[in-house]
Image (cartoon, rainbow, N blue to C red; front, side, top):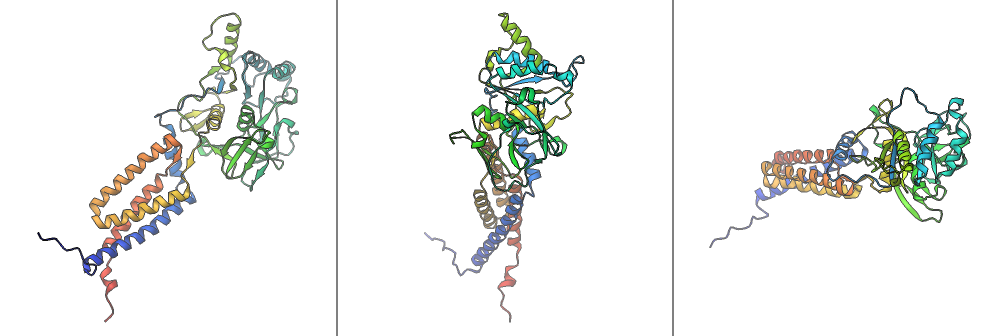
Length: 432
C-alpha cells in the first residue's frame, strides 16, 4: 500500500503557502489593532448605543416588576385644578398613604412655590410630613449663585479623582423649609441627549465644591439605610454606598461624569401603580370596609414615588422601552441599583484577546481553505458572536460589541484576500 509522502518543507509550493499565511496573520493583526482603537476610542459608540437600545427593548426573559417600589402617578391635570397644585392636594394624598406604612415617599416635583395660593396649607402639610416614616424632596440645580442655603439634610459625599466633568451648579431652588427642613433632598436635574434620548442618569453633582446626591441616589440611600457621609464616590469607577458602620450596601458603576447607565426593562417598573386621585378613593374605601380595586396595604415597606406622567408633560424622554416621564425613568434607574442590574462592557483585556484570536485565526484559515470556504466559516463565526451577544446581555447584562466585531470580520477577510493575491515571487527573487 503506497502512502503519499508528507509535503517537504523544501517544497516551493508549501513554502509559498506558508508565507502567505504569515502575511495574512500580520495584516490581520494590524487590522485588529485598528479595530480595537476604534472600539476603545468611542468612534463606534453611536452605532453601539443604538444596538444596545434594541437589545434592551427585547421582551424575551423580561425582569419582574419591582416589589420594593411603587408609583403614584399624576396622570391628568383637571381644568379645575391647574398645575402646579397647592399643598392641600399633596397633604390629602400623603395622608392617604402614611396609614399603610410605606418605607418612604419621594416627591419627584419641586415644591418651591411661595405664592399664598400654594402655601396656605403648608402647616398642615408639614405635620403630615412629620408623621410619615420618611419623605424625600426634590431640588433643582441652577447656574445662578444667588440661591438660598442648602438644607442640612442634603448631605455630601466624599470623593476621589477629578470631578471636572461632573455637572456643576452655583445654587439650587430648594423645597420650602416650612415642611422640608428635616427631610432628605436630592438634585433632580437630568442631562438628556439629542432628541430627549435618556440613556444615563447623573447620580452626583457639584454644588459649591461639594459632591451632592441626585434625587435617585438620595432616595436609594434612604431606602437601603446608607449614610452618604460614610459613602464614597470614585470618579469614573463607582459610588460605594455604606452604612454608618462602614458596611458596604451597594457598588454603583458610574462614568467620569458621575452618571449611571440605566438598565431599562420592558413592562412596568413597579408591581404597584395607582393614580393620585385613586389613592385617595382607595383609602376612603378601606376606611369604610369596602374592598378597593387596589389594596393600599400592599404599600407596606415600599418606597412610593409621586410624580407627573400626564401626556401634557413637555419633558417626555425617549428610551429603549418607549417614551417615559421623568418619574418613570427615575424608577427604572432606582430599580437598576436595587436589583444590581448594571450594564457592563466586556473587560478590555478579554475583548482584545478574543479579537486577536479571531483576527489571526480567521485570516490564516481563509488562506488555508480558500475564500469560499473561508467566507462560510467567518459568517458562522459572526452569527455565533451575534447570538452570544444577545444571550450574554440577557443573562449577564454584559455588552459584546457588535459594530466593531462586524468591522473585524470584514477586515480580516479583506486582509486574507490581500495576502492571497500578494506577489510574493518578486520579493523572493534575488537581484541578478
